[in-house]
Length: 295
Image: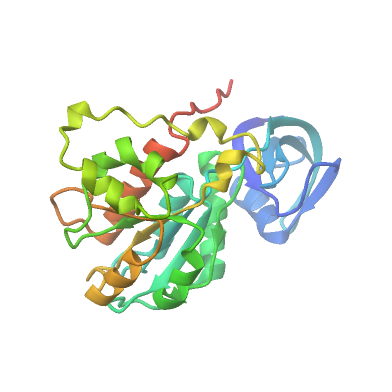
């Protein structure tokens, strides 16, 4: 019997009270025909709801694979509540963006169409499969939600309850380092003071005098009812040609908008996505949590 400790499979059903399951045809084909698994082999399965389990195959064929659930190996914890809003990029496959967004811990992926968007199509079902595969590989316990593509003008009203990290390439955004000192406080600012007022007031300070923003990631991992998960964030990144002047004005009219720059260089859209997600995770997400040791 081979013991495949690091092979993981996502199962789209709650495993909490089950003793055995039968995988669908696609998952069975992957395990038996691609990975060459057979009866008696073990793997990890997770459901995005109750945790991760060690399981053993008791029946294996090309189109059918049944598992006995042996034990729970990890309790469930959700990823930070952050949504990536991006415009599909012409020369970069969206599969790549979905994969990297999943690895970087987004909860929701929202493709959008802006005035300068060239590629307006989105294969949502394909993207969902890519997200599942990426979650299996990176040892997430959940799989991000992939939404249907939507026009920016219809998306903006839906962001009213979010804190928005707006990657503003027009030059109006403040240095990303300003997040460290004022973002957390400005979220709690009074209705008469916008988050950008707090940012701009501090942007001229020497970076060395800015105290590090305490990580808020300690609360992630305590389940879907964690109080920190009520702080919803959206990261807004434009297409190759950037947002139009009108769109930028519309975005800044929203209540909790944090306009930031990503440095002095012009980044490709896909590079900006990865950069913004990594920076957000560092300041507000779960980058301060070490991966669980696998013996």
